[in-house]
Length: 460
Image 1 (cartoon, rainbow, N blue to C red):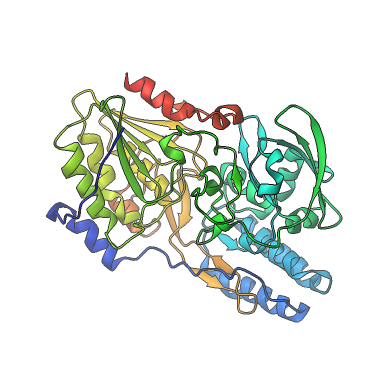
Image 2 (cartoon, one colour):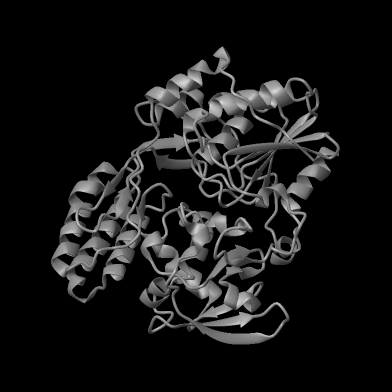
């Protein structure tokens, strides 16, 4: 495998994208506080009044029926404020906002909840522990059968109303909330903060353990938005002080997906017959604009040696700036050899501008773009492009959505759709993966990557 070094380059061909990036910012993001202040019932009611009268008027994603349900939950929470804990209040705000079933219409309070000393992920065959505090190393690889009194599937159903988005988005974000005592107590899985977990251990034995919330957060979460639950799949740097043990620690040869997360990385696979691009974010992590990095990829790798197959991996891509991906996505399907292929890897974590990237690749297809993996974290139609408004007392950031985007039927009227999708978006495409693959825990724990393996088999 040979890595590609990206260079600074400012081609005039990308001036349009640079112009948009400079003049049309993506929706504002207000970082939520890491902890909630203690709130009185009167303060909760003040925040709820603001949510109902000020925030809700900005959001267009609710149907009429959903808006009535949103108001009902806010009114019931207002009436119950005298009995609510601060964390319970935050969860009810999440529940009210999630009624829209729109992934961008969200109350960002999940990272204010406490957490158990284990982290989990949903695989095709269940909910498994993939990361633990060192003293609990024997729990790695255990399947979670029950959380308190509820089976894993029952617990998922209980917390689903608190998570904004489609079923796939809920499945993606739920693993984080299912390991929070605050959340499990609120939905009735337990009657206290000590959580009994019934586990099927890696050796096949069934055991119940009782765990409490950690007092010191996972050091691997520092600087991360832990709502983005895909980070649990990538082991932390071995030199990170106090790092938690990970199921992939013994695996020396890992899929390129499970190496350190960044914005864009590239490599040649299959004896330089397949060019692999891993795009984790549609924004740059440093001072070099992403469009310049894309230009470097084209100049240094694709143009000198036009590949027959390009694999672009969007499985950990939760979004970024729509305008960073327009020229890249529209040009890539034209930069393979005749009868060459673009194989796009997607997952439930692929979201927002990550979905836009997949859609524009598909829209620019010369009949040579194939989607492989899971259904993505949103449908081909969603609302976005709003802003995050903090509630006045709790400072919970609540994002509204006011621009409609349709990547399957297409948008034709800027009066009803986000103008950039009207101008640049595809029409009459499908975002359903042609090759659907949901990875099992056994494959993941063994270091296998069936999604990438499928792509490489198609490349042959």
